[in-house]
Image 1 (cartoon, rainbow, N blue to C red):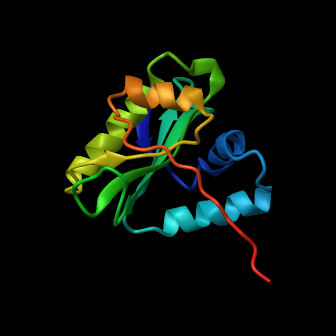
Image 2: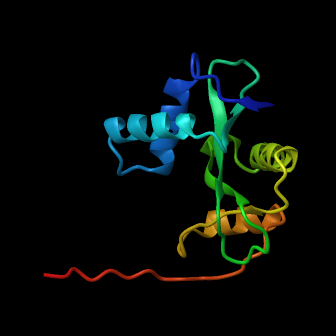
Length: 148
């Protein structure tokens, strides 16, 4: 499995397909807008796992930066914004390769910590993060109240 930076000239359709699996409620137009915004970011990268036959991607990570992340002692911090591995290649080391590449990008760019998050009910993501050396630092529930 080859891990490389996303090539906008050839990977957009596959990245869109993968993102649909991660954000199922978003429309294609919303995905495309977000993808354009991600690619315009200066402090970040999109890394992809390329299947051996090279016609499809097996997964991707979006690494960005944030001024603050829960539990971190440095600022700014590299942040794993999006991460997905196709179901048919999960538990085969693809996620590990993607995270290793994200870590390498972060170190090469001077960051000392890589942070991430997931929803409380995403047990697969929690297990994956823990298996790859992440430490859980906080659980939270967010609230909103509409004001008249």
